[in-house]
Amino acid sequence: MIYNISGLKFRYSDTFSLDIEELVIEKGASLGFVGPNGCGKSTLLKILAFLIEPDEGVIHFDGEKVNGNGSAFKKDVTILLQEPYLLKRSVFENVAYGLRVRGEKRNLSEFVDRALRIVGLPTEKFARRHWFELSGGEAQRVALAARLILNPKVLILDEPTASVDQESAVLIKDAINHAKGEYGTSLVIASHDFLWLNSVTDDIERIHEGRIVGHEMGNIITGPWRRESDGLWKKTLSGGERISAVKPPREDAVAMLNPSDIMLSTERPEGISAQNVLKGSITQLAVENDSGKVLVTMNVAGLSLVSRVTEKAVRNLNLLPGGMVWVLFKASSLNWH
Amino acid sequence: MDYIVTGLFEAFGLLAGGDAGTYSAIATTLKTSTLSIMASLVIGIPLGFLLGYYSFLGKRQVRAVVDTLLAMPTVVVGLLVYAFISRRGPMGDWGLLFTIPGIALAQTVLITPIVISLTATAIEGLDRRLRMTLIALGAEARQIAVTSLIEAKHAVLIAAVAAYGRAISEVGISMMVGGNIKWHTRTITTAIALETGKGEFALGIALGIVLLLMAFLANSFLMALKRRS
Image 1 (cartoon, rainbow over the protein chains, first blue to last red):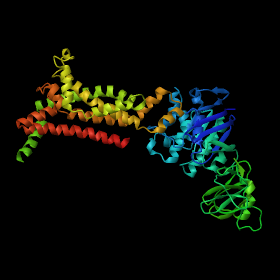
Image 2 (spheres, one colour):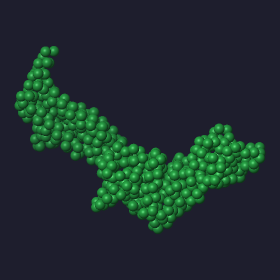
Image 3 (cartoon, chains in turn red, purple):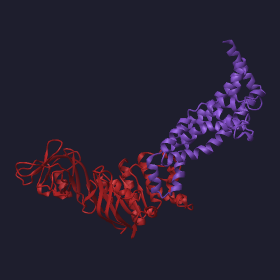
């Protein structure tokens, strides 16, 4: 394994901290992290990249214990930050920088050329451009090329597609898959883009309020939950709709909802046992990596939910982005964290 | 009004005709300002970098002192340096009073705080992502420091141009420490002050034009740098 982490803690303030009980990342694996803003994804990635040190916990990297000596491993790990910074130099110099500081001077042009081509930027067109002559997507890819040229053991990406167009997102995906396939680079990626992340990673961990809460493409529904006269607990959404749940451990408990437990219907169903029948609009459709099933992302009164359905169901229900759909799930399908 | 127009024409005549007195003052100004800017950059850039890059106890107080020195009047600097390099002063044996190196020394005292302060501001103003990026790319502490300074190079050049502008335009130091000796320590600014006092507007205007031209060139350079950075 490339990382073996236990008891990791990092405190931001009295009220919030990153608390990872255990995390194992195998060599050559690609692991994704999802979670809302401020949940601790970026901090965890910076700890994995040895940019910051945790307050507590044990990290083993590639079989060796990291004990305040993270800098010894920095050359094996590189991170692409959420908003990458390009040096005020040409594209060539930006990409070559990491090799230069390692004292590598031979065949620089060849390495830069290869790295730029991996990210879909032809050398003859881009190498001599200045940092300010690039679009957001091109700058992101130059920053990625500057990491790929280093052939790192671990490549960490923080929201790599947050500010790029669709084409760049595809090129970034191809580039990191190339690194993984060609050099066995392990990938650790945090992203809000659930579906993009699903297409580039083997496994996805969910982070919520500094903790890993699940290891699936689960939906997260936060409290507060209020007990009603029918014995069920309800959460009220912004549009007044309510989600019913069975006995949360506390009022502010976080519920996980498996996408496979959500059923969809184009007409309001009658006489069913599911307590939750909510109206939503479809925002995205994507094929899941391994299962071949379709992930349908919906907006339900401001809450984003993902349902896993078969391709046949998508065709039968004629599910399309922008279309209205009824979202159905049982109160007992909510699992508590 | 006529005497101003006449003075302007005569000024062009002096410049075009290669008037020795005029060009001597220009040469002295260039010598003193070049020496002082070189010395202030050698001293000021490293100190400004240290002040902007590192955190240390008393940093804010040091910064406050440096920023206060930005507003130091030239005659006060002239007075202090005069006291040090005059025959009775601790550096009296060096024979710097009424010499070009003496003026350059005092100008260095005047403009070094500008270089320190603006360099520190440039370093402090660097993008916070830079350091993380350099670490992520494998740079060591020394490489991070050097790259940070290179990233701030345009702002540091702006500091140099601002300091140079202050050096060529000051009059108090050149007058007090240089003594305004013709063919020797008379600079453009001291010559303008003297010639205007004598009613010799032509020479004053000619030198004023040269000074403005130098300021214009420095400012053009500054603007070009600002555009690039």
